[in-house]
Length: 109
Image (cartoon, rainbow, N blue to C red; front, side, top):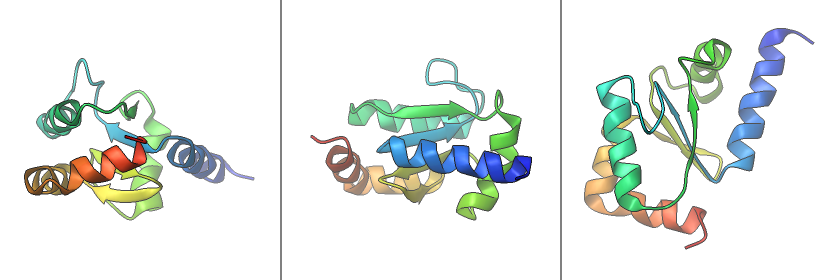
């Protein structure tokens, strides 16, 4: 078993155990990039709890998550084990109302 395999297992467990999880740069209180800040703003507006991982403090996740989800950038929002997408998709889905429905269902509204 190598380190990359272990990291992939950690990522898989995080995604499976958290119905809504945001991989971001920084924390919801202190986002470290504009894209992560916008994602947090949307998630806060929706008002349902969500887990997060600060990829700046977890370089092994930062380097392996893009391979896991085949998505190169951060933030990454995962809902019910599915990659929703990054900042632009989060914003588009928020404007349409689809994201709130998805998150509320996942969070057990």
